[in-house]
Image 1 (cartoon, rainbow, N blue to C red):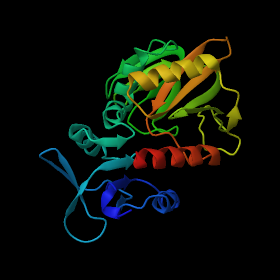
Image 2: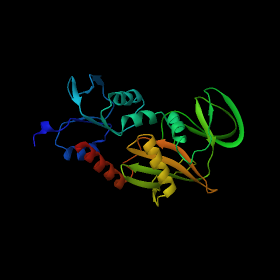
Image 3: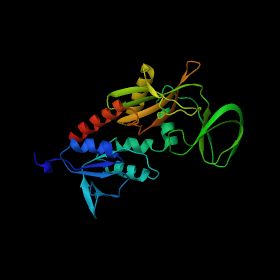
Image 4: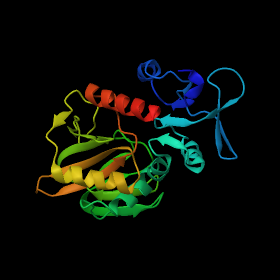
Length: 263
């Protein structure tokens, strides 16, 4: 079949190893950028700067994977375009800013718990073991655990420290996993070697599917605490969860993306 009958696909943020597999399974034209490119939306058409050379090309579908410091405007542009994007650009736009995403997710999760808020450069005093979270990065960054006096440097969500086991429910398309998060300190992550798959908790899976639907996402990674007292708590939503840590997750992601591109 002539390549001109295929869509022109843009892959943004995809690493070389994943790009090679996608490219080998698609006969059409691919524009590949590892950082957010310049775009133009005109008369309903998305134009993106060329991978090499000068000028822009019309794009039919976009696959986006990554979290960049200044990517919110780019994602918002994709949402404004309204064309085919994986994950759904509207969902990514709603979830990119961590604190607003948490506020929205709390409206739908059965495992929400009350949070507080503190403005930038504000003092507080508490006898409760407390965690403050700020900014829009994940992987355990921008978090501080304290009791007693603390003065914020940035606007932050504040919550009790939930003692228990940290887990992630990850969903890509129709596939789901539960991952035990690990770490040498109270900060737990998917990255340590000890992080591993575990049986999926049906209640957490149902909750994550609900959040995925309400937040209009095609993939999601929700972090929970399985509390020492038996209570479950939603910690945060990852709109671009790590897909390279476990090979089975990576292969599912690639299979899902390739099938979506070819639709």
